[in-house]
Amino acid sequence: MFEGLFQPMHLLVIFGIALLVFGPKKLPELGKGIGEGIRGFKSAMKDQVLEAEQKPPETKPLTLDTKVN
Image (cartoon, rainbow, N blue to C red; front, top):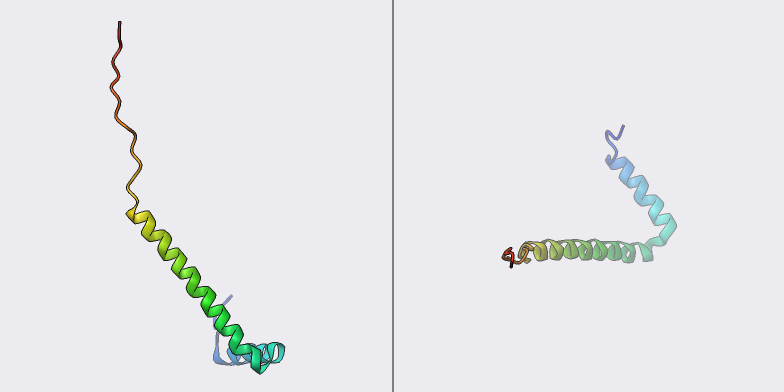
């Protein structure tokens, strides 16, 4: 179904449509914004993984079960 989805001709057509829609001045700004967003997302995911690895596992406190008569 998705064989050959990103062939060079397809990418050129997509780039051409984006150029017509956003214009030559806005296209670099749009790419920069998307790149910064992806980098921020990756950084946040990396921070979450590091926090999960550093956090000690939750343990229940030990209690003595003794009956008083």
